[in-house]
Figure (cartoon, rainbow, N blue to C red):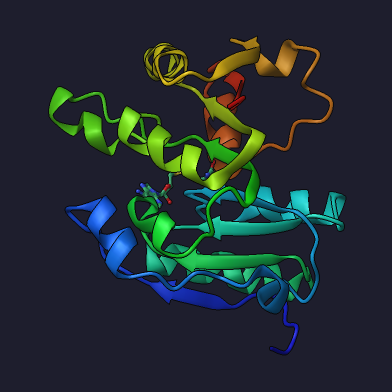
Length: 214
Ligand code: SAM
C-alpha cells in the first residue's frame, strides 16, 4: 500500500452483540501494510477534529497513531488537517469504538487516549460511556501487557466514575490529577480542542493514567 498521510480505513455501525461481531466479522488491520513500518501503535478514541493526534504524531514520529471517530464529517476534517500538515504516521478509522475488536489485532496497542469523552450522566446511557466496564473489556483485549489508557475530562463526576471503573476492571491507576494545568504533567500536555474551550471557561482539567498489568 502506498504510504500516504491519512486514509479512511473503514466505516461501520454499532453492533448490538460485540462478541458476535468480533468473531463473525473480522477485518484485522495489517499495521505494517497500513503504516509502512513496524513502529508501535497507539490509539485515540473519539479524536474529534484531530488536533491532539496531529501534534502528538509530530512530536513522536517513531510511533504510529490510529484515530477512531464515530462521526464522518468530523473525521473528514481531522483527515484533511492531518494531510495538509504532511503528517505521515496517523491513520483514521470511521467506526464506533464498540466494534474496534473487528479491526484491531488482540494485544497490539501500547496506549489508548480518551480525551474529553462525552460524560453521558444519564443512568440509561451508562453503557455508552467510553470508560464503562463494557468498553474497558474491549480495551483490555487491545492493549499489550502493561499497556496504558490516558484519560482527560473536565467533568469531576465522570472522572470519579471512571476512576472506580478502572479499579473495578483491575487496572492500576496512577498520575492522577484534578488540575492538570497546574500539575507536574502540564509541561508535556497537548491541549485538545475541547480542552481549550473548557479551560477558557475556567474549568480545571482532570487526568489519569490507567495501567493494564495482566
Ligand atoms: N477528543 C476531542 C477533543 O478533546 O477535542 C473531541 C472530544 S468530543 C466531546 C467526543 C468525540 O468522541 C466526538 O467527536 C464523538 O463523535 C466521539 N465519540 C463518541 N462516542 C464514540 C464512540 N463510541 N466511538 C467513536 N467515537 C465516539
